[in-house]
Image 1 (cartoon, helix red, strand yellow):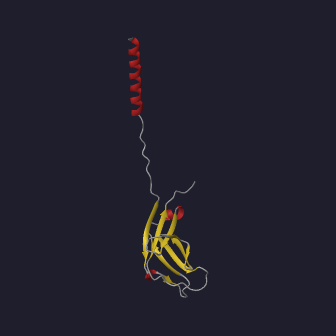
Image 2 (cartoon, rainbow, N blue to C red; image 1 turned 45 degrees about the vertical axis):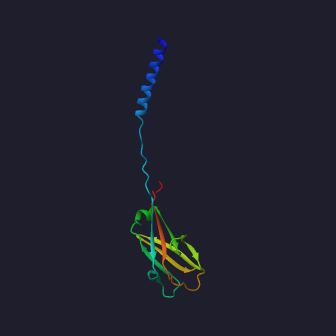
Image 3 (cartoon, rainbow, N blue to C red; image 1 turned 60 degrees about the vertical axis):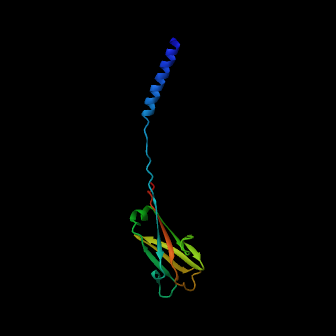
Length: 142
């Protein structure tokens, strides 16, 4: 009988220790920060600006989220869709002998078109072009 009492007391002691041990576990919540942002812009045919000899066409999009922090430490990616958003091509890209490029500065992303072979002229787009702008925020490396 003493043996059963001893086993019971040890079992109860183990149960109490495990309950207190589990009760003191600390739950940690990890916050996930979204560091990628995107927006789609519709570029109309009349939005493009042409230089005097039609060898360079560009449009500038107002992107107020493109701040100095992203300029200094983040990144900007540009994609275009010539089929209403069914597919997107990463810029720079050449389509039908037209070179699509991009540039950016504070609050602005520009898309330019020029002849892929640097000869001839570029015809203004006649339809809408969708531009997907992706901003990537980043922390500087030490």
